[in-house]
Length: 346
Image 1 (cartoon, one colour):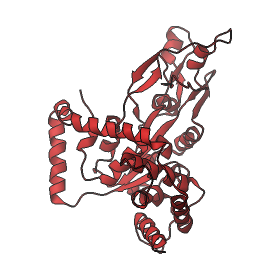
Image 2 (tube, helix red, strand yellow; image 1 turned 180 degrees about the horizontal axis):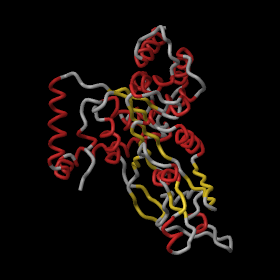
Image 3 (spheres, one colour; image 1 turned 90 degrees about the vertical axis):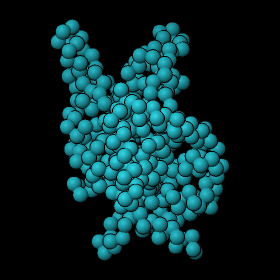
Image 4 (spheres, helix red, strand yellow; image 1 turned 60 degrees about the vertical axis):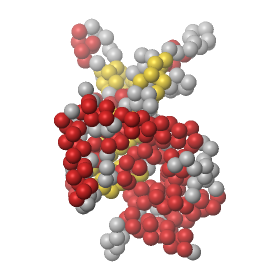
């Protein structure tokens, strides 16, 4: 049974759907943070992300979904198969699997997230075996945290470490396991319920603010689409399958074009000037602008990044990196746009 609302049927949240498509094209951008009012489709859009992603080739039987072309050095399943005693290597069996969009619930324990000893096998068979957790399931996919600003501090620290290294190290109950865990972090929440720690905030490439639509016709359209989906999810998803396939093909085409998109020195200078004028820390902001504008250009079928791409992406890439000015109540996205327009005018 279809359980996720089709991504192509989402209306009224253009900035959010754009950001999700951008990270689907280039996961190295670093993920998406979606903050805004309750009931505005944040979770719906993220869970519908699977519609955009074509299946991936994985090593057959590998719980970490390693890429057969380059199995992770840290994978305890693939490396023993590759390295035979004689020093020879053999070709790994492969299969197609859908890209994972894994939910990390707020109440999840550390064992559930990182993995732990398989108690059932330990008690029934006396076998000491590792049971992979949510981080293993999310490898080469997406890890989604709803109400991310309410996540416990020790879990935030854990996610920051794994996101930085791309590996998960588990040492407990006599086990010592290291496995690959490279994923795109997607978080959503309501800013009224608490702030996000700066260390985790910096890990998100793009940040989106969603608001309740005020246009009556748009609100009616949203209600009608959601009601039709709730009545018969499978039929509604089938109705939108053609549009979903078009979106997926667009993502695949953009991924192929991505490496050939040109970002000239003038555009890089503009990105650096904008970040310098806004006072962002480090150089992660410039790298995010570079990757995200390139992905947007590829999505639109352009061979070079233009000013309009930067104008569309800059608020998403920079609004969560600005230092707060208590005397300036201007929306952070408007501050980014205002600064960019001033630079372009000069």
